[in-house]
Image (cartoon, rainbow, N blue to C red; front, side):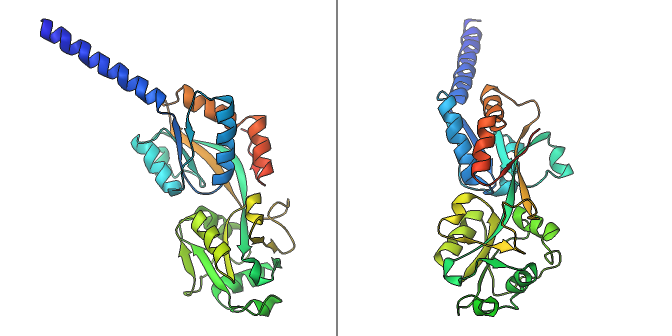
Length: 266
């Protein structure tokens, strides 16, 4: 009987220690690379208000990676740049949009181009336009950077940018597997053009193109992705609730707008 009691006490002690360790481990928000820097700014603001909670916004594992991590219980909170599928909702996931992020087309400054028509944009990515001089830019070969078919920004561009619905990318294009890779390639390679979620830091070292006369921050710019947090229904704890509340606060809305995004009011 004493052995049983000792074993029970030991088990309870381990459970309590595990719960304490879990509470002390902080909060990690995993998933999409869309809006990464903006979300990190939100994380920094949250950390200032809640120094007792260690918050981490790690590099991208994609929306699908975030969904898998939260669905499996490996992580408590995720970030996605696409709506949940019915099959994912069945896992008990809750979808909470916090910001809309315009889809930007950006180029290496060496191209000498600051705006394009939507028609020329299709011709660029299809490979019909091969040199930037054909649209008034530098005498330099166009170097295309695309994303994988499941990318959230590409899906939004296909749904909203004129001519992108059935656009076939040039076979000479490079596929970037993350948003950051697309940005880095466009920054490093002369003549490069790529696309991804808009943020004001993109303007540092890259030329963000106007399309049909509209900048991504203009009201009539057609393409945007929605950044959302996800979590399992019934899993909300104090750390998660604090971060969700901050993400929907006036201060977070100000940070979102400073990055060129549009806050979503729930």
